[in-house]
Image (cartoon, rainbow, N blue to C red; front, side, top):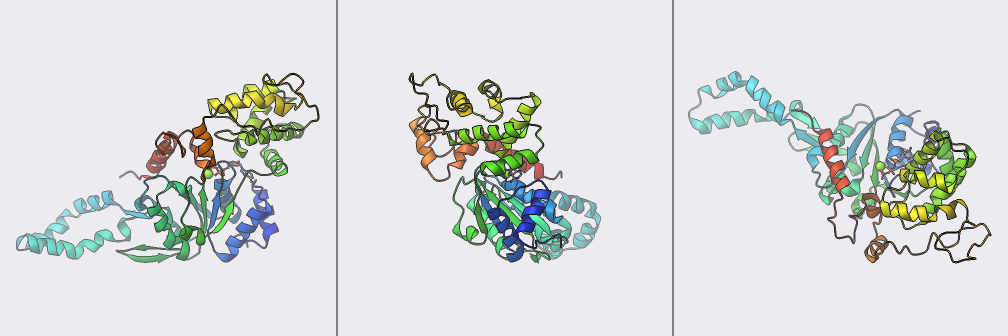
Length: 384
Ligand SMILES: Nc1ncnc2c1ncn2[C@@H]1O[C@H](COP(=O)(O)OP(=O)(O)OP(=O)(O)O)[C@@H](O)[C@H]1O
Ligand SMILES: [Mg+2]
């Protein structure tokens, strides 16, 4: 049946058919999810395919995708449900005459209020309920994939709200009762490790740390994206990207950046990967000035291990074809505060949000985070 998987190999091949190349660990997790009915929690750096996994799962199983994008300060009205205040107001206007009849012959305010109160459940009925993704997932007639994206950005209070859902696939609305999913949703949670998630949340999930793929799989991913870059160049490009990932960059290039770089080089008609060409296009993959400077410094060495770097002592060219040490040496261009921050757990926060990670003096919420939260919030607001 399209909705479940026969075995792990079935997961691998069906995801591949939809352009997602899952390794054995990931495919096993997805298979177990479909059999055990447990949510999956994917943690890992930016751009390693966490969100895409949920999207592909929806495509592969033919399920509708519901997405809850988490952000700081989010409350349950954007996650669970809201009462549609605008609609309630509209109905009271339209029903003014009827309401007038109900309270018309009431003696005094107290009696009038009492009569309205007797009717108030009308305004807290399904009619006026505005379900948000979590409730929608549970109420859906058809089985869905529920993506709870970047859950580490939400506050712990929202995490608590998630617990009931994740354990029982149910949501309680005090005025209406408890909704239980008719068909269990496949739930995928993602986290960039900006903070530790609660043990209670982790316990309810199949937990998997995703990291950058090995060179072979990354090559397969690049080739599956029809970037137009010849295979030999793609292979060389991946070696360069992997070299960059070993540098102490604030934001290491992810799979999506490798794809972008390959596309860029293909558009430019590259027939050879020279350090010059890579340097001219490095801004596609490296997004911070300091990272770019560091990248430009080491590119010649990554392309050709025999290349002389400006800082190399004369005769320092080793000529035996492997990278040793340059990419791992301490990065003096980074201040000690940055280095210290990199050693803390949750370093992806910094990689992800830039200069506002732990150990920095800026406030903990990066600008981009705020903007994305704002946009995500507004995108979900219904016109009233
Ligand atoms: N295994 C894979 N197979 C095919 N494409 C992949 C794979 N992993 C990543 N990609 C590509 O990388 C892109 C980025 O992945 P995605 O947006 O899922 O990353 P993410 O882990 O959610 O990152 P972020 O933390 O920034 O949200 C995807 O759109 C997809 O094109
Ligand atoms: Mg994502």
